[in-house]
Length: 174
Length: 421
View 1: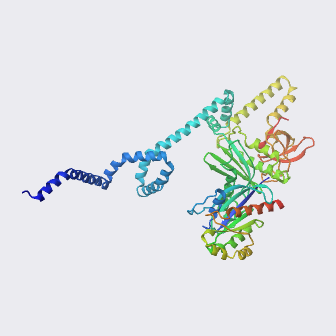
View 2: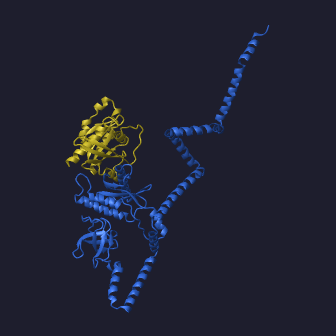
View 3: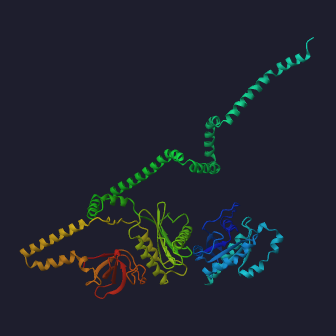
């Protein structure tokens, strides 16, 4: 049985939402920054074997970054089964804003799944990555956290697949 | 003894004279070229024949690279020209754009003319004659009929889309003609556009009201109607039928029935009757129905009515004169038969009027497209009885018998074809 899930990519501007989507969809990276206007919609079919064998189609709504929580943004959130919240690990302010984005998203979709991606990890030294306090952030946000790099592709697929598995598991239980 | 210095000079002359001449010639050539380069007009004359050929060759072999290289320069130059010298730019463009537009329009008109010719050829002379006669009666120029038939509504697909997520719940489409390159993405974007339109046109603090009913992209038209939790989108090419939105509302009723009665199976497969309904009612090309032109008097209808009334009177008079017994036989039958609409329309009807459903439909609890469907889908061709009417648009139908009618509900009158009693 095929499954269709709408998921949103949410976060501040220039944190790499579109680059993450491109990496996941086409396994490519574009160095020059082009701001997303409104919303980009794309989809990817994936075959999961865990928790059950299933063909899952993720319809990805990549939303413009840093938009205030207007009724239009609220409308774009509506009907999403889950979301990937993205921050730039080199810009602490974008990480701080995550809790607000999650709160707004949950107002519209109280039961939706959420996963946090701390992107641009390739720009930090190994020491700095190790020093980053993921545990505190995980406790604060209550979501799984993935360190990712759209530039190198590090952990990108894992993050998307993790969300897909959670959605599949939840739907299957329901 | 000769002067050695002089001899050396003579020797140098002999040895280097030729080189010096060459050097001098080269210097002159360089000077000439430099003068040409420094003078834009002269330089242009030199490179013009070469650069055109070079550019042409490069464009043939590497079109993408040439376009990428030239695009920023050309767009900047064009922008600058438009800003600084608009009139000159317009004058320069007119000779190019004028014929181009003219050619495009000519081709479009030729294509339309071909379709009109085809339409006329296809119609038998009797059909055409009838249509023209009927058009004249209703005040429509016959050429409008032919023109309208040349622009038919060709359905491409019909989709039922989740209102919130934009995910397609089900769809049917003509073979090879899906909605957009990827229907899933198209449905998502359509939903985003609807959301945007709704929020944009909603007054401050109001509940959302702005609903997008129609969208046109090139030759495609997307007609939309909103149901509870989903919306339906009908994609096609050409001029949509007049009752398109009414039919979409009817479809919403059918979908509601499918969802509310748990006919939509647990694995997400829509019930077969819904798919049949979609294919039959929304994917088949249909005959064009024209609306009367506004403001044209119904002279034709009045004349026909007067003529029929005259014939009736003559018949009645003749019957009265020749065979008084026949009056009882002829008059009531004729009146009942010829003027059913005048006598029977009202709410409720004195006598149930037999009719047949021209489309599969789910009757509603009230004469309102937003009213709840009753959960019974009557297939096209079902014989029913009209027992009441609401305005000129809705009829309350009974099913299955006139003697013991079981009230089924309300359906649009456009879906009923009255039958002779």
